[in-house]
Image 1 (cartoon, helix red, strand yellow):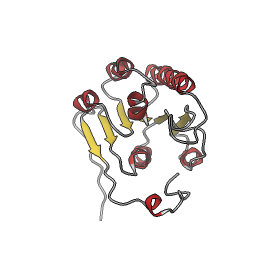
Image 2 (cartoon, helix red, strand yellow; image 1 turned 30 degrees about the horizontal axis):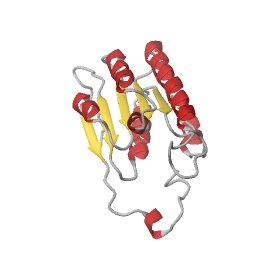
Image 3 (cartoon, one colour; image 1 turned 90 degrees about the vertical axis):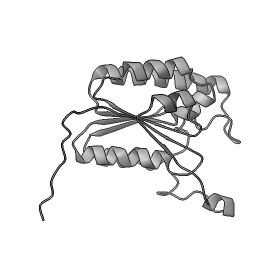
Amino acid sequence: MEIRKLIPKKKQGLVVVITGNGKGKTSSAMGMALRATGHEMKTCIIQFMKGDIYSGEWDGVTRLDGLVELTATGKGFCGIEGNPYPHKEHRANAQAAVELVLEKIDSGRYDMIILDEINNALELKLIDYEQLETILKKRPPHLHMILTGRSADPRVIEQADTVSQVNEIKHAYRKGIEPQPGVDY
């Protein structure tokens, strides 16, 4: 059987929002990065809140032949029990992440940019809505932009081309099972 490749008549970048309280938002975005790699597309992932606890994708992307770049800019999840950093430090890191996103857009080197946990950063006031709006307006027409995190702002949902909501039905954590490598981080 011959496998054929679909080629759209018009290439158009999409804004995709992956939100909700269930597990799998980042995993879904990572799957999109993997899929883009299969098409020899260059992807940049900027993690807004992760950075204080190791996550497997950090080393995993290094195995994708240089087509995926990942930068963890955060200091963990702001306001979560056990996170020692004050809101001011989380905000400073998120502000630096916004500047990095704008630089990556300006570089013109990417086909896809994933803004991991940006919805949380917005909800926690680590970034302002106007900053996210600037990012979305600055996005060139060919660039896919993926926004993950719980509680996506309704204004962001309105602007998106595709929105998926991940709902929790059951989670091992609720049964006292600690997070597992390769599945949870």
